[in-house]
Length: 386
Image (cartoon, rainbow, N blue to C red; front, side, top):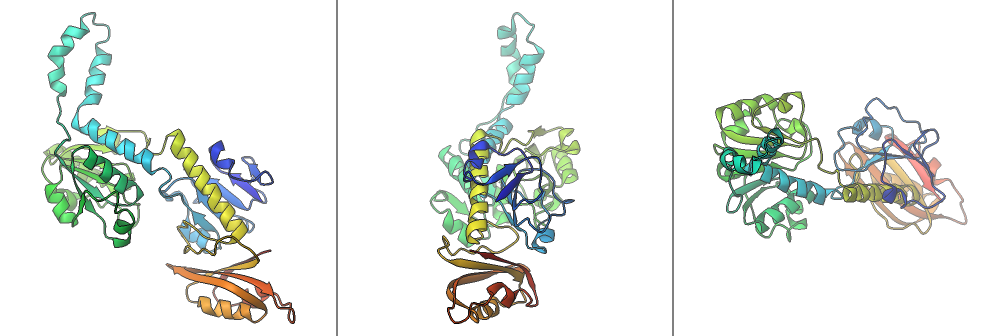
C-alpha cells in the first residue's frame, strides 16, 4: 500500500500504518490513498489507482465529494478527533468576548515604556471592563461531538445552556454530555440567549444561516461565536448588526477581509484544531480509516458514501460501489451465483450505495465474483480483497 500525504501529517498518526506501507510526501504516483488536512483538492483529478481520501479533520469543503464519489473514491473525515481542541477554543472565545482582554493587552503593549504603568493602568482599566459568563444563557447550535462538549463545559461554568439540534439520534448519542442542556427550537433559543455559538457543518442548507432574519430574532446585545466556518455567517448582515448594537461582539476563528476589518469583531487565525493533541488524534483516526477500508472494505466515517462494516476480514471480500438505482440485493444475488457468501451488507447515502460481501469460492464453480457484477448498470467500482 502507498499513502500520499498532501499536507504535513502528524508522525503520531503515521505510526498507525505498518512498516510495509509506503508513506510519501513527494509523489502521488501509484498511491492507494491520500491523507489531507486543508489543501484544496477541487482541481485534482485522481488516478484510477486511488481508492480513498482521508481528511485529518472534520470539515471537507476543500474536497470535491461528488466528483470523487462518481469515480468510486471514498472520502473519510475524522469527526470528534479534534472536538476537545475546538471546545476549549470556543470557551476561550466566549471569555474574550465577555471581557475586553484583547483591548487591555493592547493598552499594555502601547504603554510598555511608561515607568509608572502600574499606576496609570488603574486609571485606564475602566475602559476595558466586561461582564461575567456565570448565570448567562448560552445557545448552542449543533449538539454533535463539539457542540455537546461546549454545552457540558458551559453548564459546569455556571451557564444556562439551550441547545438546538434536529437529530434525535445525535441528542441520544450525546445524552450524558447534554444532561444539563435544554433542547429547544431555534426561535426560543434566539429569544433567550446572551451568547450563541455555532457548531454545524457548512452545507447548502446552513450557508449564511446567521443572517438579517436570524439576528433580528436574537436578543439585543447578543454575542455570536463562530468556530465552525466563516460562510455560515452573512458578513454584511453581521456588520449591520454590530453597527446597530444588535450584536455586541462577533468572535470568529475564520476571519476574511471583511470581518478582519470590522469594528466589534474579535478575529482569531483559525486555531480551532491547532493543538498537538488534535493533530495527532485526527491523523491517527484518518490512518485507521484508510487501513480498515483498504484491508477490509469497511467504510467508516465516510462523507460521500454510506458507512458499512463487516468487521475484520477472515475470507475473501468484494466491495461494490454503485449508484442507488442499483439494488444492493441484486449485487449480492449475482455474487452468490459463483461463490459461497458468508455475510454481506449494503447501504445507501444520497445518490450512492455500497455493497460489501465476504465469500469463499464454490468448489464446483470457481467463478469470478468481480466479473458477475462489474457490468451491472450503475456499478462505479468493484474491488476484491484476498
